[in-house]
Length: 132
Image (cartoon, rainbow, N blue to C red; front, top):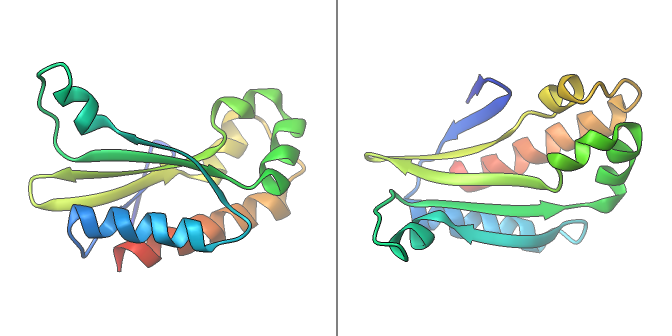
């Protein structure tokens, strides 16, 4: 796991398709989370005759956690709902998301430590489940 410019990036031990499938399964199995959107950047690139390595993003959320963050700072809505991107570079598959500590700093959220800690733990657990 690495943290670069507010991003948490993990290397997956699985293929791109397996990693992404596991991610969707984990999200859909959690009754507190709702998958809002899946976007296949590679497919979209292909629709205009451009090539892009496998790259998909999923947007998902839990309004019980996201709403207080947006109430604390309206600009937080630009980064919510949460998103996780799965992408492949050469033979390595990566999973990446915004570090909640970065969101705290970026949006000057000062009074939501419990929620930010819960979100950090959930994102770590979700991404570990699809990468390990």
